[in-house]
Length: 286
Image (cartoon, rainbow, N blue to C red; front, side):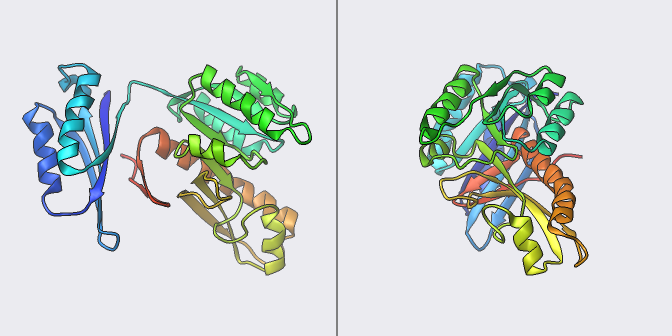
């Protein structure tokens, strides 16, 4: 069933659920699913609402324009998505293949509802994986002192392919603040550590030196502050003193795959609301 999904937030107060539900009911919409969360500490209200698209008897533009007027009266911040539209996702990689291969395999199996029109890399190493899935691979090397030139090439490709979401699948380059600001809330990065611990490069070596008993991975929206963007998904696995940094890295690969895929799924299914530097991630339907 194709659906209309509204993501709504505002300062919390009584009666919001009733007022918003009544708005859609009065216009003949069947509410298929409704999730809400009241943050009693932050005093903020969040809602995810699914409507039956069969009940839409006007244009999509008219629906959004009319709701915008209603939202203004309640001071709502909102987004509207239609599930019959498949988001277009670009994947950026360097030399590490495991997260890329997992995303492409799951997409091939139909587990990720999106289109992947291109893969971009600063190295040629993973072109053979793109070829397996018949996805165009763009090799954009970074010349010394000309990083901005390469980033402009990336921006041009993203615009040409009408990209909605950028996934950094172990893309080992720091994006400029201009790029992350332009794409804020639309770039998902996987960090091979359980943030905020072990930010930056080589976290498994530092985890080994610290003698940690758990290692993990974090998927977050990229921001201009390195590894500081809103966290979407995290997971951990127990380890012990017998594991070397290389062994920790091998164990961590499985965690990275799971975490990145779950984060991408949550974004594609429109289950995430960002507020300041936090996210509310609604659960998937079962």
